[in-house]
Amino acid sequence: MKVEFYGHVRQYHNIKSEIDKNIQTVLESGQYVMGPMLKKFEGELAAYHGTKYAVGTGNGTDSIWLALMAMGIGAGDEVITHPNTFFATAEAIWIAGATAVFVDCDPKTKCIDPAKIEAAITSKTKAIIPVHLYGQCADMPAIRKIADNHKLKIIEDNAQGIGASGKGFKIAELSDATSTSFIIQKNLGTFGDSGALVTNNPDLDAKVRKLRNHGSNARNVHSYGFNSRLDDLHAGILSAKLKHIDEYNDQRRKWAARYTAGLKGCSTIDLPIESPGYRHVFHLYVVETHKPEWRDQLVDFLVKNNVDAKTHYSIAIHQQAGYPWGKGARIAGSVANAERNAATCISLPMFPELTAEEVDYVIAKVVEWDKQTAGQGSAAKAAPAMA
Ligand SMILES: Cc1ncc(COP(=O)(O)O)c(C=O)c1O
Image (cartoon, rainbow, N blue to C red; front, top):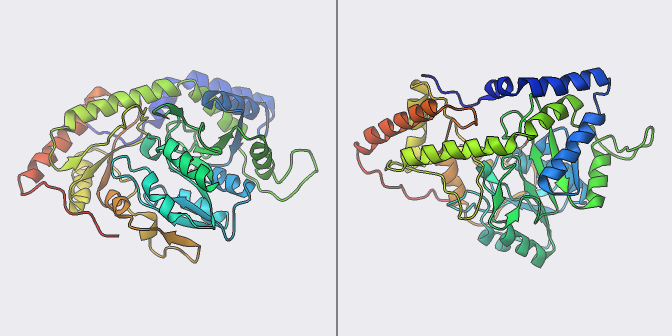
C-alpha cells in the first residue's frame, strides 16, 4: 500500500467530463484572458461566499497585497498576523511595503490568538490578517471587535478554508475583504496558479479590479497597476470544481473523523481540535508530536512505510534564515505556541478521494510508531519552546 499526500489526478478523473467541457468552451470562445468564463466564475464565487463581489487574481499572495494596496496600506504601516502560517501571508505584507507584526497563535486552533492582538497594536497599525489555518476559521467575532475598537481593517487569508464557517458567522462576513488561493493543493484548486478576493465593499472591488489589470478597466485607459489576472481556462476548471466543494469538504471531514477515532488512543501526539460550533474543512489534518525531536522521526517512519506525510509549516516565518531580509518586521510578545506548532507539526494525507483502506493504513502506521515510541520512555509533552 502506498498513500499519496494529494489526490489531484483522482479528482480530475472523477469529474473529467465537467472540467473538459469548460476547458473546451474556453478554447472555442477565443477569449482566454478577462473573458466570459472569468466573469461567470467571479459571479459564482461571490454567490458561494454570499458577498457582492469577487475578483479573480493571479494567485493568493497577490490577492492579499492587492487588497492592502487598495486600502492604502503600505510604507510606515503595520499589519498584524501570526508566524505559523504559510510564508506568503507575511510576504504579501512586505510586498505592499508595510511592516509585518507577529503575535502568537492560539495553542488549540493554531489560528491567531485574539487575546494577543491588542497588546501588539500601535499608532502605526492599520490591519489584521487572520489566517483560517488548516481549514478552521479564526475567531472572527473577537478579531472584529478589536478591529472596530482600533479602527483597523481586516483581510481574511482564506487560502485554506473555503467552505469553512465559525460559530454563528461565515467567512467574509466579518472582514473588509477575504483572499483565497486556487493553487492545486488547496481545497478548491486549479491545475496551476490563481486566486481571488471577495468583498462587500464596492470601492475595494473596483480598485483591485483595476490594479490587477495594469490599472485599467477600459481599453487604452490606464493608471498605476499590475498584471495579476485569473485566466479563463483556470476559471473554467474552478467553475466545474466549485459545484463540488461542499461534498469535497464533507468527505475531508469524514476522513478527519476516521483519523481522530483511530488515533485518539495515541499517547505521543495531539490531534487537531474542531472548535465547538465551527465547521473545520480540514485542508490539512495536522497532528503534533509531544516532543519536537519526534516530528522528523514520525515523518521518516511514515515515509519509509509508503505514507507521504509532510509538515505545515516546520519553520515559523521569523525563524527562517535571513529573517527579515531588510523588511519591516516586529515580534510582539512571546510566540511560543507558534514555535511549538512549527517544531512538532505533521500533516497526514488528506484529500477527498482517499479510500477507507488508505486512511486505515495510515492510522495503523501512526499507531505502530506511537506504541514503539511510548514504550521507550515518557510520552508526556516537553516544555514549550521559549520565544
Ligand atoms: C495561508 C496561505 N496564504 C497565502 C497563500 C498563497 O497563495 P498562492 O500560493 O496562491 O500565492 C497560501 C498558499 O499557497 C496559503 O496557504
